Structures are given as C-alpha cells and as structure tokens.
Length: 523
Image (cartoon, rainbow, N blue to C red; front, side, top):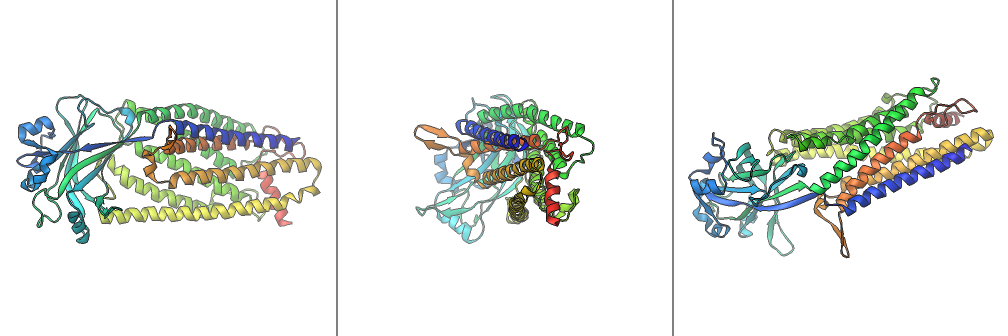
C-alpha cells in the first residue's frame, strides 16, 4: 500500500509542478511586456560655454526655457551646418519623458538610458574604426523635478567615456550600436532632465565642430507598469504560501522521532526554503514610497542567493545517493569540490554585479563597459563564472547519470527483501526517480531562461491577431516553477511523525534509500 500511495503522490505532485508552471507561463504570455522602450531625440542649445554649465556650482540644468535665456536653441535641420557650432558652445539636452505634460511613474521600477549617435555619412565612423578612436568622452549631468514645471534639482554629474561600435549592415550602410549612458535603480521622480556636453569629438583635427553628427538621441528603457503590478501580485500570493510551507517543514523536523538524525539533504531543504522566502518577500513595494536606488542590486542578490542554494541542493542531493563508502552521515565539507564550483561562480558574478550596479547606486553614469580596460576586467569576471557554471553542469550531469544507473541496478535486488520492506523501498525509489526527473526539467528550463538574449525583453510573438509576451512568459513561468519545485520537494521529503512498522525508519526519510544503496554497494 505504501508504494501505491507513493506512486499516486508522485503523480499528483508532478501534475502540480507542471500545471503551476504552465499556468504561470500562460499568465506571462497573455500579460504585458516586461519592459518598454522610448526614443528621446536630444535638442541642441548654443550657449557661451557648455562646460561651465555642466559643472556650474549652482547646479542648474538647461531646458527649453533656460536655453532661450542663456543662448539659442538649434533645430535638428540646422545640424546640416554643424561645422559652424564649436563643441565648447554646444550642449545637448532632453527631458524624460519627452513630452512636458507626461510624467514618470514609480511603477516603472528602474530607468536604463542608452546613448545613440548618428553620423551624416559612413566615412566618419569608418575612419574612427580604422584609427581605433571610437571612444567618445562627454560631460553629463542628470536632474529631476516632481512638478511639470519649475526648476530642476541636480541628481548627479560626471565625466563618461563610451565606446561606439559601428559596422556596415546588409545594405552597406554603416550603423552604430547604442552605448550605455546611465542607470537608476528606482524611478522615484516625475520628470528627469539630461544635459550632455562633448568637450571634443574624435578626429577633431580633420572635422570642424559638430560637423560629423547628424543626430544625438537617448533610448530609455523602463519596466512596464502592468508587469510591475503583475509581479507584485505574484509575490504577494507566493510569499505567504512559502512561509507557511517552511514553518510546516520546520515543525515536522522538530516533532519527528528523535532517533531520526537530520540528513544533509533535509538541512539543505531548510536553507533552500529560507532563501525562497527571502526571495519572495515583495520588498519592491518600498519603491512606491521611498527612493530605493539600491533595489536592483538587492533583488539580484536575493535571486542569486536562492539560485546558489538551489544548485547546491541539486548536486549534493544527487551525490548523496552515489556514495559507496558506507557512510550514513556527511557534512557540507564532504562535497567541497562541488560547493567550491558553486561558490566560485556566485562570487565572481557578485563581484561583477557590485562593480556594475553597485557603483551605479552612488554614481549612475558608471559602466564597466565604458573603456577597453574595464571591458577586459568584466569579461574576466564573466568568463570565470561561465567556466565554473559549465564545470558544475558537467559534474551535475555525471552525478545524475550515475545515480540513475545505480538506482536501476539496485531495483533488481529488491526481490530478495521481505514484502513490506520491498514495498517501502519501491516507494522511495519512485520518489527519487521523481526527484531526478523534475530536477533535470527545472535545471533545463532555468538555464534556457538565462541564456536567451535580452533583446527578447522588447519583443512579442504574434500568432494571427494575438500577440504574446515571450520574455514575460519565461520570467513568470520560471518564477512559478522555482516556487512549485521547492515547495513540493519540501512537502515530499518532510520527516514523518511515525516510524515505518518494519524497521522504525521514516519512509519519507531520504537517508533510508541512501543507506540501502550504500549497504548494497559494499556487499
């Protein structure tokens, strides 16, 4: 009867996992895009000295009204005569949002702005690439206000260096990629103003003033309001559920028979449950009331902590069933190689995150991708983390195959056991097969979400008259899958209050199967 009930429970839990993942996927697919992008062409103001304005001690910002007072505004058509405007007198500016009557919302959650530079002809960018002079230096200042009119308050200012990558397209026309300009971890204010000043342009000895430029623009990306609301709802629902399951799991561990020593696998489940609760708490709601520029870094840290716990649980749980030395109790130090790989990948990803978004909390214009030296350092961090992740994947696949083959071989030896013991072990074998299957499924889906290009964030898949947000579906589906997987594994392997009648062991205790495999391996 035990194996029958175990079989039904495995089928039920697998259905719940797949069903919840599909439901979350559909919610995301039918929902809004996760992000929205807006193009902002920059206006040109001719003033006596743009450099003095950017570094003005009064911290004033240039907008349409200030430009009329201090100088004159130049239309985009007049850039055809840009050689008449020296760089020291030219200042580019644009409000965000572009229309004065519009305002930003705190539900936008973050603000990422890229710089786009268009040239009149392909000759200039070709010369830049030829002479390796495609780094543009600028002085930029960022201001804000919380009314649709009135003075601006300076938020940040500084010098930036951005490398512009240009290449000919399929029509032979040279186009240039956008360069990251700044990032804000929260969108707390109603309007923003960007002032941009080029002290000089590359190859200024060959080209006069702003003559190479056709247009300077900003491309702003923020999280969509509808997706933010959807994300708040998902976290507000899943957070209390994960807390309840964790409390129940800890209660079962505390009230189980004292003769049952807590296994390493169960201790890792507890840690994974704590990190899931920490990840599910909707701290994002704070951004609706407070300016939280650190929120993006904090959210990435929470997700990284849960993923590290998840990966550690996967590799150690599988390895626990591959031991052949007869040991019944192990510690985290036993798997120092596996944990070392996980910690190495997480550490270098955290260093990269801190060096990029961490510094942007206090200086939003900073970017590791601003010059070739920092780009090289960034690729070192990413390269070491990627190699560690690849090594982990190989170790996990080898351990999974070994555990599955060992399980298949040991199943043939169950016929020599008594009927009650055989039924008990058949149930444990079914549970472990379920664990292996869903673990591989979750791992594949998680990796697929990570490696997909970020350009999908702004794309929709159209089928007939219907449009589906693919990236939003992956985000919500992956989030729901992680929650369903963790909670179901905790429920499946929670210690029982009663002993099995045959040998006084808990039928849900993973150590019972581990002891059986270890014992059989020694024989």
